[in-house]
Amino acid sequence: MLPVARAARLRALAAPRHGAATVSARAVRSLHSRSSHRSSAEAATAAATAAPPASRQVDYAPSLLDEIAARRAKAGKLVAGIAAVSDSDMFKGPQTGKPKAKRWDNHLSAESISREPCSLKQAARHLKQPGLISLGGGLPSSELFPLDELEMKVAMPPDFSEKATATRGQRVTIGKYDVRDRGGTYDLSIALNYGQSTGSAQMLRFLTEHTEIVCRPPYADWRICQTIGSTGALEQALRMFCDKDRGDSVLTEDFSFSTALETIAPLGVKAFGIPIDEQGLVPEAMDELLTNWDAKARGSRKPHLLYTVPSGQNPTGATQGPERRRAIYRVAQKHDVFILEDEPYYFLQMQPYTGRGQPDAPAPTNVEEFVSSLIPTYVSMDVDGRVMRMDSLSKVLVPGSRLGWIVASEQIVERYQRHAEVASQGPSGFSQVIAHKLLDETWGHEGYLRWLMNLRLEYTKKRDALLAACEDNLPRDLVSWTPPAAGMFLWFTVDHTKHPSAGTRSIEEIEQEIFDSCIKSGVLVARGSWFLTEKDAPLPGLNFRATFAAASPENMNTAIARFGQAVKDSFGRK
Image 1 (cartoon, rainbow, N blue to C red):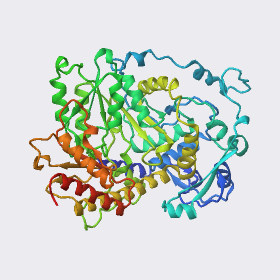
Image 2: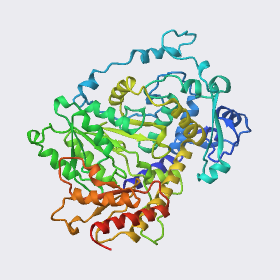
Image 3: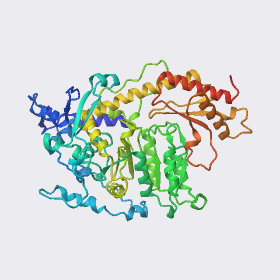
Image 4: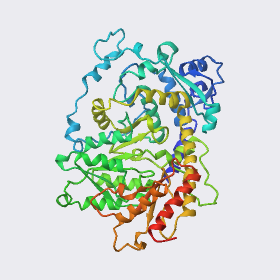
């Protein structure tokens, strides 16, 4: 089992080796700090001047977390000013012995290939020269920024609850000149000015290290670029790989994220659905489709791009297991398909569903167990560099941040950067500096992983509450569902063949009737037809999607009761 292998690898890293270096415990951030109202720079200064605890003898890699802490200590303070140029190679660990990614020139669109570096962004490389007086770029003076500092109260481990945060949360501030005046690494004067399309070096360092902890790409020249969220990243990726003039198309699940489908359609390329089961996309069906591809009949040349949501798939809630992902990757290799791995729900992997009234499955007790329990990512098995992974803070922190990142080969990230330079220009400085303050300076990697562990338990409780409501309120001979292992969605299949008008009315008409009845009774569920990939194909079944992300258990029960009644009314049941 791959998760066991990952745990063994982490334990092996923890084993002592000869030549260990002495690293002060001060280098590792305290998870349980309750410091009062301080800026990050003040907190760092206080830690540095406090009486140090006894140093502990550690290897540079007793675990990935300590390896990263030791690497930072060796590198010293990160100095990265306004519009600083940076890339993941500045922050990665050794990549010795790893192969380089394949090149994807034949997969890229003419639009992507034609993009040149932005002249003004390139000119910013000279800003780091000592004594340079810039009359080149149109960078406003921070003296004219109408903000002096930002203040916020943040949740702290081990109790991340809303109540604990309100009463015992840690107050932190972000000043305009923390770097100049307080020895900080990131402040408002840097974050709120223009930057590079990769995002700030400060956040890029954290995300590069986070990717090493979670994904550990097996090839050397992987990189990261920050984004304005996965939807924006997908739109750019589709334009990078799809060209309607050469008859390109996109493969995805039979039912797929409706916004993704609505992003694909205006580009003039077709989306083709691959059959799915309880573990999502079926690799044998993908292989058969590509092996027998008829370009003339399909109106498109053989696809070279797959878009998939592997964990908690939207809308079906299906999660691809480790072997399923490896099988899909092998099919992609066989047919030279590039994979867009969209993983907004990756860290919403829940505890196994044991059944109502049954003892809960044991939860991970520490971050190593948590990381080892996660299903391997496509990036972690990507020996070719044929995957672009899209990550986001939307589902794990706040959707309004509009902050995410991609992981891909150097070639693909460079092409993405060229597009971003003249489109979004990179993510919001407000979002980056707030995220950096929380994730890097306040929580650190271990604190963030503990937050994700907390989310796992919270979403497990929400899922179980919705499943209990379904068992109590839905007619089991008409409605079926599979408990999701990740994400925030539950996919209902309604047996339309038992409908009294099944022979005279279409599935779409029955779906519309149930949906209208739901709205009238005060509950909103999503119609399955909204997510059908091939819009000109007949609906294969009658489906609805419900989410357990926001509603309380009491409201979930009420909502499912209303949905169940709408189904029964349509089917002539009492």
